[in-house]
Image 1 (cartoon, rainbow over the protein chains, first blue to last red):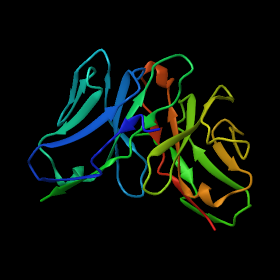
Image 2: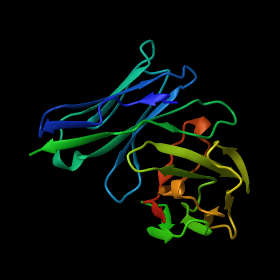
Image 3: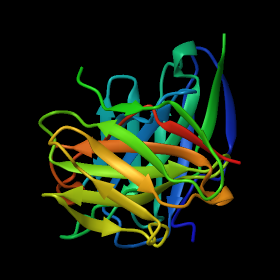
Image 4: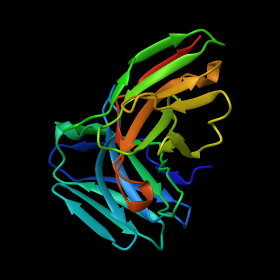
Length: 114
Length: 116
């Protein structure tokens, strides 16, 4: 039951260029989306989120775009830095009373090439 | 920045044994979670806990699993009789408010459970 899909298991980008990570979802009840970053031997750390009432949210080098009609979101990192090399997880939630869970994608391993 | 602490970082056990995974959530958080990630797969929700009771659980969280907040600071996950397929990285997380309000989860660094 892959309600959140990250179809690219890996991505390599030159340092200084833009990294674009993609995520698709199937559950139309999802209305809150998050990106988490994970280094080896560490837990996921929150990066950025977006509510379905917006189509863009920006925080420094990180921007998340949401296309509700396509059920697609993307994370843009610009400029990419070597410290951005990590696994990136897209997660989604339906903000309804009683729902406590985040549904994660399988992750995309981003490698920034110096 | 405050963090979620998990112990041990690695746990090896024999099939059929009981294990307890321990977590200390961020002190002013009220919502607590366990997730797990089997190698190469996605991070999966197991259970959420609020006000000393389970608020939601997944189909994975069967009768072999239980959670407890024994002393107001620790949050534990117990697996009564471990199976080979329980081998995974288990993440504890906490949040100051419910996910439904758009609050983010803070994750611990995980306990790698290996069932032999």
